[in-house]
Image (tube, rainbow, N blue to C red; front, side, top):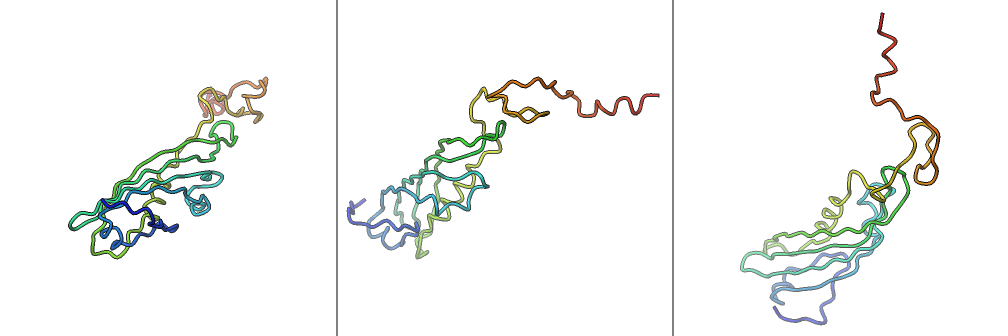
Length: 162
């Protein structure tokens, strides 16, 4: 792989295939603009910062791209509903045919970020969440509410007994 110090990394992450072939591959990294990925995650989650590392390998019929993305994301705790910052990291590998004129890494990056979204985000292992009766944050105050019945149909018990 030739060392090209002056290669300008495209901000839209769309690389010219011919450039990669001429350089016999490329290794680069860049800081991503979170605004470019604002539509990827469901609100209120948002990407706070992200960095992308790419390694292109020029092969006879294909270009292999290995990418690593990492950063910080603002998410809402599923228990207490407070926002907190969480770190993320993931990688991807993809092949692009040499006959394609461009290598669209933006699309692959967006797919990778979309798959990072968790079903549940918990701010701390000991998060007590909100009270199901009064709604207070049990991490901050201890309410006197009785816990709800374990069986959601327990309130119907007296309706069907003769």
